[in-house]
Length: 226
Image (cartoon, rainbow, N blue to C red; front, side):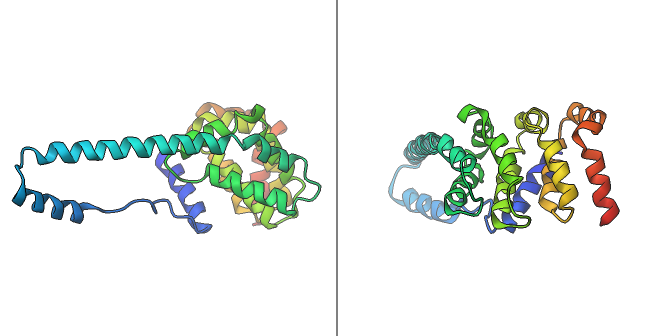
């Protein structure tokens, strides 16, 4: 189940033109050539020690840089949420910029899972309620609606976030109603599926609370009109 959910996340981002493995580089040939050269000129017992130390130093430097960049980016979270909450027009440049930055924060990189968990808890836990309110003001099938749904999808993937978004923020109720108005939106369906993944207790609650969250009714309506 976990693998299916992670694969779904990749497919959405591929649809937007963001690859999941772009930072990977195959250095095997270069390393083999370097080790062959070192074998010819240095003692083989000393080479692995030097190489390991150098690699370890680079890895530590990269990790420190990633953590620093991550903290710096999330410091702007409250400002980005405010830009969405206070906008008079959902299609204006300011909310569009905020959505692009929120999407980048929740997108694939070495810290994406930590970012997604932190994003819905920091800024006084206002990100998800603000996104849901913003979505209800967007024009159907607009670029701002699409980007807001992508951000919501990304933060709905960690298991730690599902109950908060689905029930505490009334995400399933709002999205199920939106689905009835826009049954052609496959992205709303995907978010609802993501929120139901990996948590049998949450799924049972959503079905038992069907008359209050409209999940079953919304999905049934889409099946009926599709």
